[in-house]
Amino acid sequence: MLDSFKGLAAAEIKDGKTCLFWDDLWLNKVPRIHYLELYSFARVKDMTVHMALNAEEPEFIFHFPLSPIAAQQLVEIAESLESLPASDDTDIWTYIWGSPLFSTSKSYDCACCTLDVEETLSHLFLTCSFAQVC
Image (cartoon, rainbow, N blue to C red; front, side, top):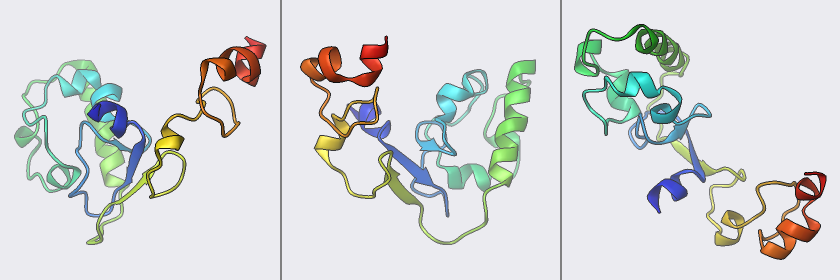
């Protein structure tokens, strides 16, 4: 259930202390999934973004040598980390529907269409505009 819940929440990184580097959604991706090859070289699987930002050497974070694909992914993720503004504020968490407030009904809304309706069998097979086109 935790993975399902985490798929609903995204972090805007400020100090990076509440966001898991590999497992949380930040910068519009989950690094463990997006950088799968690089993740296989990770020394610390449960580090925060704060820990990654403050690591003195890459050797503290990764097992070396990296594969060519992992090295390319390291460059990409390093550029993402460098683009983050330095801040002492706490991370800002919002749900994918744009609100910091959780709503169980939002987690059941149809992901296929733009209607704000519950994803029921009736909706999916009869009224969902996306399903009708398919």
